[in-house]
Image (cartoon, rainbow, N blue to C red):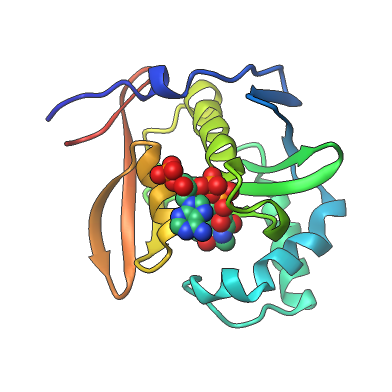
Length: 188
Ligand SMILES: CC(C)(COP(=O)(O)OP(=O)(O)OC[C@H]1O[C@@H](n2cnc3c(N)ncnc32)[C@H](O)[C@@H]1OP(=O)(O)O)[C@@H](O)C(=O)NCCC(=O)NCCS
C-alpha cells in the first residue's frame, strides 16, 4: 500500500468557525448547515431528471415524502453533516454525509445546482467538505456510490483521490480512507 497525503493536495481553503468561507481563484463560497428554508429547492434539485437518472432511487419524490425525510434528517445534523454552499447569495450546491451502517464512515451525496455545473464548483465544494470531515468529524472512511455512466461524478471523486473499490449493478463504489489522525491515505 502506498500512502498519499490528501491533506497536502486539498489544503488550499480558509475555514472560519461554523460559517465557512472558501477561497479559491475567483470563487467566494459560503458553507453552512442546511435549514428548513432549504426544503423546497433541495426537493427540486433531487427531482431534476439529470439527478434522478443516476440515482439509485430514480422515482420522483413527493413533497410529503421529502418533508417527512427532511425533518428527520435535520435532527441528525450534529453527527451527520448536511451543508449548503452559496455564492453571492445564490445556492450553488449541497453535500450530505450519512453515516454508514457500520457507524465507521460516511456516505457522500453531492448535488451542484444545474446553473453552476461544469464550472469547477463540484471540486471546490467536495474538497471543502472533505477537509471539514477531517478536521471536525474524524471520519475514518468516506464512500461514494457513483453510476458507472456518470462521468462527471467519476472524474470528480477520482480527482480528489477516491479509489474505486468495487462495481455492482451499474454503481461503482469509491472510497477514501483516513489511516491516522488528520491524514487521509488511499490504496494504490
Ligand atoms: C457530478 C457533479 C456533482 C459534478 O460537479 P460539477 O461542478 O459539475 O463538476 P466540476 O466542474 O467540479 O468538474 C468535476 C470533474 O468533471 C469534469 N467535467 C465537468 N463537466 C464535464 C462534462 N460535461 N463532461 C465530462 N466531464 C466533465 C471536470 O473536468 C472535472 O474533472 P477533472 O478534475 O478531471 O478536470 C454535478 O455535475 C452534479 O450535481 N450532477 C448531478 C448530481 C450528481 O450526479 N451527483 C453525484 C452523485 S454521486
